[in-house]
Image (cartoon, rainbow, N blue to C red; front, side, top):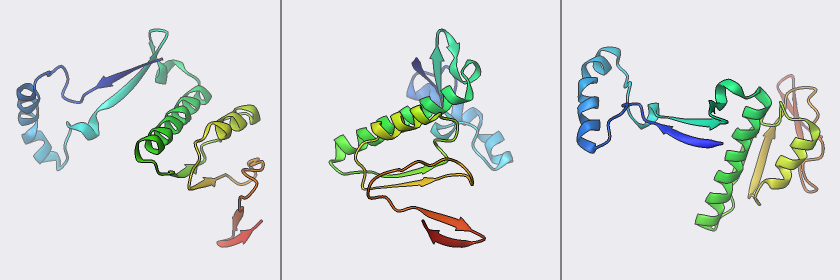
Length: 144
């Protein structure tokens, strides 16, 4: 899988070309009260076997790639700062089978804390030996 950066300002290469593209769109941005170009609108495209991964991969494959990127991001943070990350994992294991769930959890870097959320009825398994599990029922938090 290859990662391709797709800037929102198109084929502009130099700083002056980028600035020109942004200036050209300024009137539209003002009229719409939003910005249509800039780093917040840039995209990263994943290409696998010459095809756009988002269009050709299954939901599970896309979820797995997303999780791999999160693990890499957490490891990079840990290695560059010397600090353990705090991980918030909201429904991340939803489309994964039990084997891939286990594989994902085994690959997570050591973290200060990890918060998981699961849907009602979703199999959670044992997250960790020293983990605490809570369930929200009718607006009341219950320790498991």
